[in-house]
Image (cartoon, rainbow, N blue to C red; front, side, top):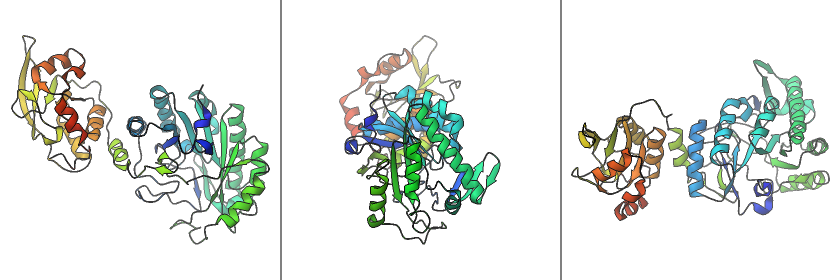
Length: 422
């Protein structure tokens, strides 16, 4: 059984040792809040609804692999937007399925407004989702009407109190349904001065009666381009007494960082900016065409006898295939894409080598490795004689025997971004 205490948002004691990653696979939303402006491209802004890139499920699985390699303290994989998970149910459930297959040890978490979650309660329980956050900032439709511009239910859009009433009905049913399935529930409540600060403890009482486990009172963050842009952010003098009063009926979260939709790392040591390049590279990955014929192997070589060139240094690749006698032959030399910065170079390389099952080089950075592998081309960091390595590739042998000192040294200095690759 998974240790649910290792969720840093639900357990403050583990916030310094357990991390989380938010996978931004849900761009669409089914409500419009008057405090929300979802921009995708501001890496320096830390608030919900913001991400540097949006991922498809298979891209999210690759990104998860890269994140765990860089930060093994990650214990939670979550989806929190940049829209709402259940305005994008197919993408979210597929992402959860892939993660469950590849990383079943992780805790799985979702953060939703609750509008569209009800049809999927059994699905997320079956996929092992252990924690769900529902954002509820009002339990009175008259107050909710001031917070939400519109609510979309299928093809029907509701506004005003009717929209707030429909949303609230779904939210309260969601808490009940989640608790019936043994899922830990957190309620996020946005504290908005002049709108709901005198009502927020009533939210606490109602959700506590339904069995919610913890509440997170989040001060409004005024955001440019929204109806609430001019409201002053409430300080501790406002939030502190509200938490104290609400704490009589439900546990209060006090260490929230108002995380981005692509947040990654420990709560006190977010690495979203550091991993922005990896996130963007994964968002450029293309699905593998498993039916594409791949008879060849590409080699980065200076003279055509040894594997002795860094992937990014190669101006051309030696393309090898099998001959009629069962040996190997040089088919052609193929020009590499023009050197440049960013993932496009490696996308172009994958297209150039689309008929190759593998590429052999003395060193390969993380980003090109990810992009080649996603396109069905296995990247191998090896050294030595070409034909010896080809024998192993074509026969499905262990390529580790061809690794040499030069490969490991060169690989260590490759950023994978294209900036040091010739």
